[in-house]
Structures are given as structure tokens and as C-alpha cells.
Length: 240
Length: 240
DNA sequence: CAGTGGTCTAGACCACGGC
DNA sequence: CCGTGGTCTAGACCACTGG
Image (cartoon, rainbow over all chains, first blue to last red; front, side, top):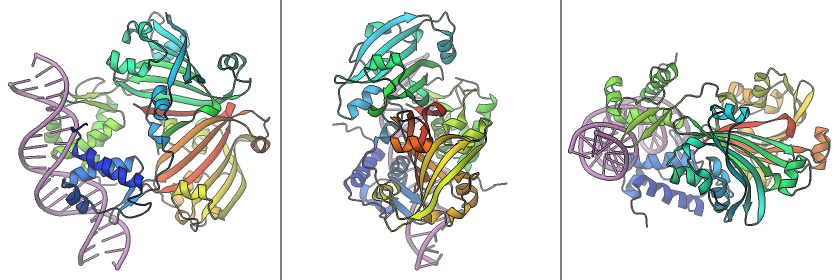
């Protein structure tokens, strides 16, 4: 087991378990910070760090001068996916078997559109990757990715039906992924896409267009994805 | 002015100013926490609290054992769309004239689904608001909102074709809005919705389902919206 | 090895809510 | 008024990075 867990993580996990199991029930008052300090034998700072995380993840609410209350825990909390996750992670988290049919994976010179999105020159090569994303043998998505080649030498050698690009970026190339700018809209499947996805024309698709940056703020890749409407849902948490 | 600003807020604001003004330039190393402690004459905890917020807002990145670096601040970044914005704000920002046709606005007892989403009891009344959202006379969206009535007494008296609910919450009721949990998917317009929106059946719709919370973490309202696919695009920034 | 950010403690005082 | 969570201090030690 992982015994290098921090105290605030242990406290977070334990209280989260109690919330999910119903030991602390919806809208009830949680023990005071002082009580939790005594129970877990940690300092107030550690309790507060765990509780702040529970709060920002939507499990509890704090009211100054009054106490800490249990929120209604949504049964299908796919809002855990609200941070950027790879297709593979999402499918795997739902107990599925993510894989891809690779339609194309080659080095190309970027179009003007791709240059603009990735802030690069037409001379800078990008990898063009065209995939059908599947769960087992069920096609969910048609996806085109443009990756700045200088960050991922020989990327085409590492791509495989089971490989997650996220994993390659992080594990193989030691890239630290940062923000992603996403745009989503609903469209009726155009002729060509409907053929590729083997769905009837005019079926609703969720079209996603995203640029993903490195931690340093530099664009790493640009992706266009067509998700079959009935088979994908995008979840996110936004703040005012 | 608001002089009751906390120390960590002052530190945050000052460092944020320096980042935006370019005083600390992109990818440069920020002063060590100890140096900032001395400069601002506060404890390390206070510095860290300010820096954690700067980090979670994407301004800086910290690397353990190395230091804290300045991220590239995206110049053309459209913060307004990526943060939670009202329909009215989005339309107005694009130079449009947002308005609504109010199909219904009344106090009701919530269904079980609504109770679960809003963490309330069936005895707690909610306002049921059904609207067609338009730009000038062009219909863009059909929307149903359930608002916890206890936070907004007499809400139905203030609703009008030109009123923004956001404005009412913030200005009229002095509510501080916090997070929102959004789910988005593409659907083919069902019969009833296509009639309401006066579009052909099976047109692609962007279906949005969201719960919006107050700053305290309590749910304020639950909204279901059907956007005509070709007329709306959802943008957001996510972090890994 | 020295220096950085990450964790953690044991205190103190304040601001707010409710009695 | 008391009790709550929010802010803040002054320490300590650890884990990681890089020379």
C-alpha cells in the first residue's frame, strides 16, 4: 500500500468515505474543526486543508460562525471528469476498454488554420493523427489531432491502438500539460463524417475543438473531435 | 474603498499586478517565498495562500525543489466566455439585443429530480421559469430554470423579458454566485422541443444541464437548456 | 550538498451567526 | 454572550531539484 500518504490526504479520504457511505448524512452538521483535530490527532491546519479540498470538490459547505454542512452527494459524479482528462481515462473510469483505429499518423506541414491555433510557422512540422476512438468495438468518436512535432520526436513510432496520447506526452516525453481551451457545439452529422462514424446522416454530433497548452503556456496540440451525440457527455465546473 | 482587505488578498493583488504589467516577465523565476515574506512583512503561510491562488488561476507554476515561475499570460484569451456568464452577457458582448419570451414563471413544489439536484426537501418551494431566449427576434434557446425560492422572495414579480436572472440574483438579492456544474451533450431535437423552437425535427441541439451554487456551496438553481445547434457555442478553459 | 517548495504543529486573534 | 470558521504568526522538519 501507499503509506507515504500525507496526513491531510488521510483525513480527506476518511471524511470523503464517510460522506459517500452516508455515515455523515445530507445537510447534517459535521463535527467542529476542534473535534476533528482530536479524533485524527492532527493540527487544525491539517484538518482545514482536508476540509477545503472537500469543499472545493463540492462535498461540503462551510458557513462562518455556524459550522460545516454536508451537501447532497450527486450519485453520478462524473464531474470528477471536470478537469482535463483523456478519452482513455474517461472510458477506463467507467469500466470500459478504450482503444483506437488509427486512420492516419504522419508528419505534415501545417495549414494556415493549424498554424494560427498552434502559434507556429508553416515550416514547423506537425504530426497529423486521425483516429476512430472506441470502447471495445463500439465507435464513439472521430478525432483529428495536430501535434507540434518538435516536442514529440518520432511520435508516429509510438502511436498504437491501445496507446493514450496523454500517456505518451507525460510519461514518454516528460511534458507537463497545462490549460486547454475548449469549444463545443452541436452539429448535424455531415455526409463524410456520418460515413466514417457509420451513423445516419444528420444524427446529432458533439463537435469539440480544443488547443492544449504546456505548463509553460506554449501550445502543444490542436484537436478536432466529433462525438456521437448519444454516447458522450461533457462535464465541467465553472466559477463566476 | 474596501480597506478591510486581508493580507493574503493584498499580496495576491500586488503580485497579480506585477504579472499583468510585465514587471515579472514570462518564464522568469519569482522571488523565493522567504524573500516575499520579508518584502510584504507577512508570514510564510500568508505568502503561500496568495501564491496558491495565483497558481490555481493559472498565473504561475511552482516546481518543488526549484522555484516558482511566471506563466505565459494569454493576451487574446477570452476570459469572459470561459467563466460563467449569463446568456444576456454573452449576447450583449457580441453586440446583440438579448431578450426572452416568458412562457411560465410560478412557484411550484419540486419533483424528486429537482430536489436531488438542489439538495432540498419536497416541501421547499422553487420558482419554475420557462423561457425562450432570443437575440432580437431570433430564438436561440429553450430554457427551464428551477430556483430555490427561499433565496429569492417574490422572484416572479421581477422577471421580465429584458431582465437577466443573474442581475437579479446579484443586484436585487445580493447573492454571491459560486461554482456551476455543467453537463453538455448533443441531441437530435425531440418532437416537442422542435415545435417550441420552431425548427425541423432532428435538428442538432446542444443540451445543457447545470446546477449553480452560491459562494457558500449551497445550490441556488438548476437549469436545463436546449440551444439550437448552429447558433450557440460553449467555450471553456480546463486544467490538467 | 544547499536551497526550494510542501507538510505540519501550536499557538493567537478576528468576524460572523445565533442565542 | 459564546461558539464557529477565517486569518495570521513563528516556528519545525521533509522531499525534491540541481550543481
